Amino acid sequence: MHKPKLLIVEDDDSLRTQLKYALGADYALTFAGDRQQALAAVEDAAPEVVSLDLGLPPHADGAEEGLATLDGILRAAPLTRVIIVTGNGDRANAVKAVQLGAFDFHLKPIDLEEYKVVLRRAAFLHALNRESDAAVRAEESAVQFEDILGSTPRMREIFTITQRVARTDATVLIEGESGTGKELIARAVHSRSSRRGGPFVAINCGAIPETLLESELFGHERGAFTGAHVQRKGKFELADKGTLFLDEIGELPLLLQVKILRFLQERTVERIGGRQPIAVDLRVIAATNRDLKSQLEKGLFREDLYYRLSVVRIDVPPLRERGEDIVLIAHTFLQRATATLRRRIRFGSDALQAIVAYPWPGNVRELENKVSRAVIMAKGRVIEPVDLDLPTVGPSQAGSLRETRDRVERQRLVEVLMRHRGNVSQAARELQVSRPTLHGLLDKHTIHAKDFR
Image (cartoon, rainbow, N blue to C red; front, side, top):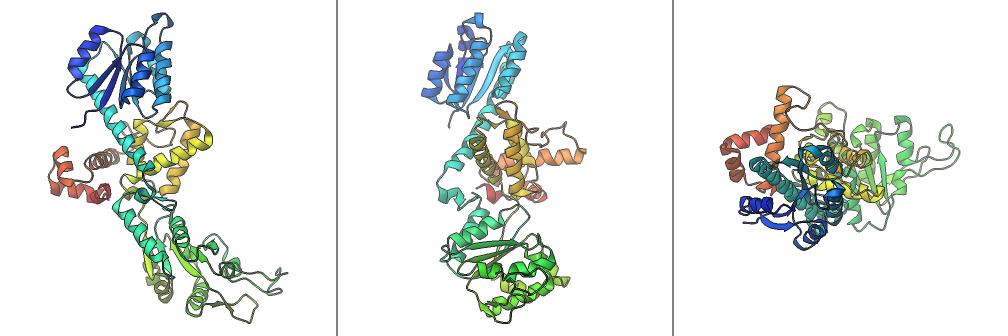
């Protein structure tokens, strides 16, 4: 069994001996007595967790030597979890150390049982971070398809479908909530297709007034209407030899649905005011965040157009149903934001728990915005839930008792499934519930065990 590597930076020989016997069975221990030894040990042993006495020699410098050691450790190994150990009289500097990036602090005299709990929590969260960071750096084929990140079976299935349909000229309908990355999938289809040398033209059908949308799509001739001073090509013509992406297709008025259906049947368009059909060679990819089948029943979307568009359907899951992808994507956005803003910063344990527990109604787009905000707003080197504008997970969290219980329950389920790689039997055993009970809880929170394998 793998033992987490623990570096204990402590100059008190008697305390070092006590900790050696208390922790040796659970950790691969390394000891250091000053800053130089500690930094050398970090480089040589690469510990997951460091226990750092804030009052290192020379004692005349107070806590400055300990804080300098902390800074050196985090510079050399940013993911290492550092636990500050200090006397009660130096609590202010312990808090300062946490603001600078330490994971937690523990006051002397050491209570071994409490200290072990802090160490176990630090080791577990380091392992979570390590797995997420390794996933981010894994080979592109394992977690990334074009610009889309994902490691769950559901996302890998989407990558496979996208790759297969890209080899054809079939129309594609991409369905999913706003912010799930539908345009990224459309661009992936285009870039993997034989049309990749042609243009990729996108238009949001819900963002343009109905009176202007027909001209945007099909173009117009000079003098076709007031203000049409010159001839203008529409998106269909501009996408010739390439791909036309019709985003939010469910917003199209019925009149324009007829014209798009005619194009899909005849492969020609007519500009407003024009009399000659113009042949256009392109592939159509459509996307929607609406339930088009319910639109069909209400008479708001044409059934014949729906089946023309949905030769291949790709259903993109919301972020809340993507298991460990949430942490993977959050770390990727963090890396991008820190590189752009030139800040060295990481997620704190409370921030990671808040990210996992939050339902993400705005999906990937909302996650990216909140991570960027956090990198700007964080005061120290550790991102907290408040920096992400997320609630802290815990019993003191605002909301009803039921809401609080559900949030904590969902977070616990996700943590255990991640630890056991989606193994329901092992997860049920740790949670001390039966398999049927666990399946009921997973259904309640829309969590799929297979997404963690």
